[in-house]
Image: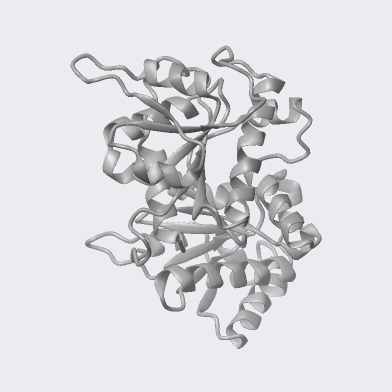
Length: 351
């Protein structure tokens, strides 16, 4: 979908994620299995935790994955293939028990994200790829943000010297077959329905348009999902489409955006799906709430989906899955989504 026009090996920081989860493990597997795709990337984290991860992914007949300490991002480009470059952060705890919620783990994950975000905002790296963190551990650490998106938004707003409201962000879940952008992210469904306002819908359309214009090199075709079954059926099943969503689309079109809808949410994603035998009608679908937009992309394959944060003055992607505490430390975790996240970060980076 997105042409690679920038530096083939931009500097990318990969945050270790929750050390009790599969983040360090899938990072190690990515550097072991697809070294060409990982050139120029490095890990921000705790050295012993990453060494433990490298040991977890040992395979019979395959050389062990060496772990190299770097002191600056640019050294990542000098690393040989099948080597795990780690930029250690001071003050992080050593290896923690696998599969357990812990404040120490949440704090370590957050500290890595903050370092990488600030490095990106200073222009020292082209972007960041965030391995999964655990929201309970984050909360236990006293971090006042429910996830990566909100934490990064706060960092970017502070860097720019503006209020959070002046740094609106949106979540895009992307694969080569389907991309969706969400009007609301992590909130209860009752609150998400209230968040479907003309202002929020229009703002989402603007953010999606700006982000994809940059990556596509043209105006994206945006399909807008309705909120209600059958997109409200002309008001029989709710008036949000008539009173809120359609006026927001009309306002976006007056600004030159190629946005259409609201379309029935049970068919718009199929219409947008892009395959060799069925070119999608839309480049992206704007969905009204979290699960409406994420279920279709995840159904097509969690290993293919990538979480992209839109609206920030930096590139951030992440795998489309969580910490998988139940298999952490077993060596079973699949690195495919992380590898896709690195690929998308390269596509979107400007360095």
